[in-house]
Length: 391
Image 1 (cartoon, one colour):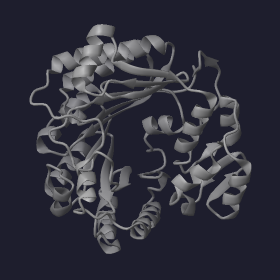
Image 2 (cartoon, helix red, strand yellow):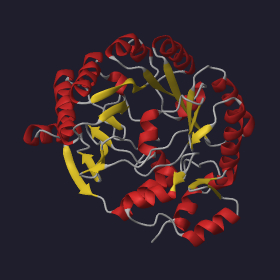
Image 3 (cartoon, one colour):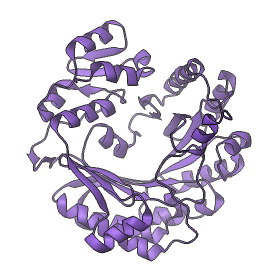
Image 4 (cartoon, rainbow, N blue to C red):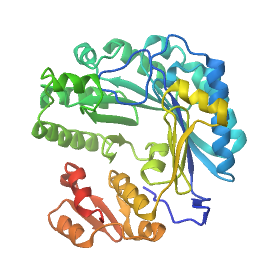
């Protein structure tokens, strides 16, 4: 897998490095009990108003990122498959007008697998979307009910079939390590997932996130997560099975055939620049961290006042950037080039003694200047980051 080279910088931005665009659509039909993303339920959505707002927010970022080559667009949410295809097309057209785009630009849209949203797939493909990421989350109705999903297992599989007809590249998400889930049950789910023919699968362990309904149930003693040892066993099983099937983990939770990795997410994990537009969107622009207003109404108010949805823009120090690059880069199977990143940020990336100790213990491995986690290390990534980060 190729790695990013050090590029010349203009005002902190490496001008020949790929640029990604993230567009956040904040609306959902309902709020899932495990979800801590910026999502909101509204009775009505003015598509024309939001179309204009998102395009205007994009133009604001484009003016600050001139001369960049856009290699990916990612519509995330919320539930972007609730967007009018005309809104999607308008954003894509604006991106193409304001940036040079690669011939094989990756344009991903996250979608829920309801029959209503699947009916839009043909129009979304016509709008320019060429990769879809389906939130299946489970195949069986009992697990879907527990996760608060609005679709059935049959509806999810039908939506996947429609997606595979309309989009060249398809990913779907599953959540595992549910309470009481055992190896046999998850193994059977993996068998089914790996037999569906997609080139990319995202497999996430259930986590209890603060502020969610699951967090409230857990605090009340009404929800007991799977214990850590059993969850670790399922993680190891997942890595073994996907690797054998030819979709190895290129990131902690993402598995793909070689060449079908998410280009957008690789830009993010390799610490490249990405413009973030829409409510709650984060971005990284030439050494700056950008954050948009989260609440849709506040975002629209900021757009009316300022011509952009920004609530926060902060210059990152070399130390802050190095720490962020370390956290994201070690999620990747390819790891990080510690020398190149150290030169880029003008600071030491890792503590040498702690790093050597974890290499000796088999949790880290070094190939030349590249540092990566081993399978044993991926189970303890948070602990490893705490050990090797320079204080």
